[in-house]
Image 1 (cartoon, rainbow, N blue to C red):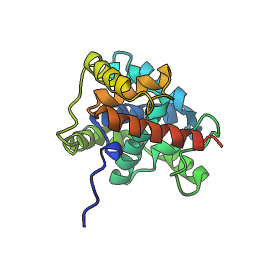
Image 2 (image 1 turned 90 degrees about the vertical axis):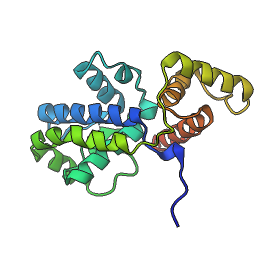
Image 3 (image 1 turned 180 degrees about the vertical axis):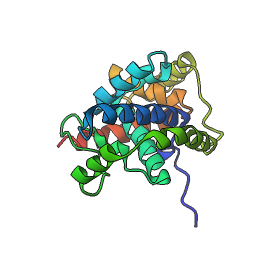
Image 4 (image 1 turned 90 degrees about the horizontal axis):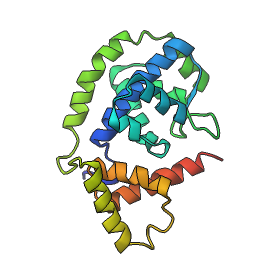
Length: 201
């Protein structure tokens, strides 16, 4: 029997677009710094530096990076490349996401030794395929309508939203902009925040 569809676990168009930018940023990083790891915040800053006019990249938050790195790992797995995402590390532990399995030193060495030119050439086609797989129900919204939708949900569900800070709100709105309804956006955000905090210890 097919697994039930879980919109909170589905990659969005935003995850794919930012994930592609992060793949490019990681290649830039590895060409300059070899196997050295890079923190989540620093990776986002590098992505912004490489594409300063990308509005979605400018809005990207550390607490939303896990899904983007999941896209990077999936791209590398599909192409038979070393996992670029292993270079991205949690700021508290300076280690990759808990989902990473294997010899980290060897994985980073493989990334550093690899010729990424063919992979970058293949990335646009992979992005097109990933975009085509996003459910049609995930219709992106502009920032203002997304904020209005989130605020209406927030006002009607203050108890459920009581721990959402102004900083948290930015990532929740990003998720609503990506096409999630506010309830699903909140659920996905809280799961991501919990995983991020758990990885800190």
